[in-house]
Amino acid sequence: MNKLLFILVSCASAICTSAGQVDTVDIFSPSMNLNVKNIVILPVDYEEHTNFPTLYLLHGYSGNHKDWVNIKPDLPELATLYRMIIVCPDGKNSWYWDSPVNPKMKYETYVSKELVDFIDQNYKTKKDKSGRAITGLSMGGHGGLWLGIRHQDVFGACGSTSGGVDIRPFPKNWEMETLLGVYSDNKERWDQFTVINQLHLIKSDLTIIIDCGTEDFFYEVNEQLHREMLNRHIRHDYLSRPGAHNAGYWRNSIGYQLLFFHHFFFNSP
Image 1: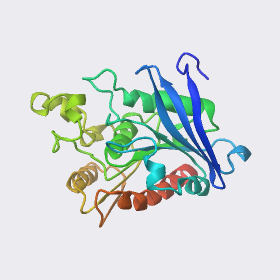
Image 2 (image 1 turned 90 degrees about the horizontal axis):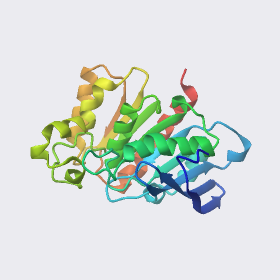
Image 3 (image 1 turned 90 degrees about the vertical axis):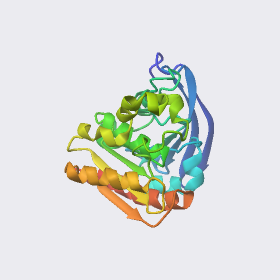
């Protein structure tokens, strides 16, 4: 372990099941000078093998690191079925940005650098972008694409379910003004911090999946993102089906995404 970066690490709990192990791990973030809680899910055969790929799974606004195991209780079984480690960090209400307004909110650095380094140093992972993917729901869907696109040296695949892929139509929502400043006074900054304006960074080898329900308030911005990616000839999978912005939709959608990332991890050339 890198002692400079990770001064304090403690396993708050470890739940062993027939499906594997679910740990709650506190990881020290030097960039924010605080401990961040994370769920780490290991496949049942973790001790028997090496070089597992890792999926980083991000929660939405007002959520925490426990959200995904509550939404999808069979995640440990799916980690075993799809032969991957699943990591769920607590991203607070950060939108997974390094906030230019609040220096205490550096969750882009935390997830893409500090967390990935810790997981690679302390677990039997495939330590290459071909063995890492990131996705999430709502705010975490924004985060999955934001971090995946901006850190293509770290993540080989990324995704979003019900994601806030263009934040600008919602300037008064979800505490974003506390992270970016008031929209009317900082339009250029808001342009820079929205996923749909990151597409010029995408390289041809980034694997992408996006889905959103047709009754979701984020549906139109996901449709716009899909159309813009088609216009730019950016390869991606896009799913749209009946559903709203709720746990029932996410419980269903993450099953498709886990299968998608499994194919990326084990069938990529």
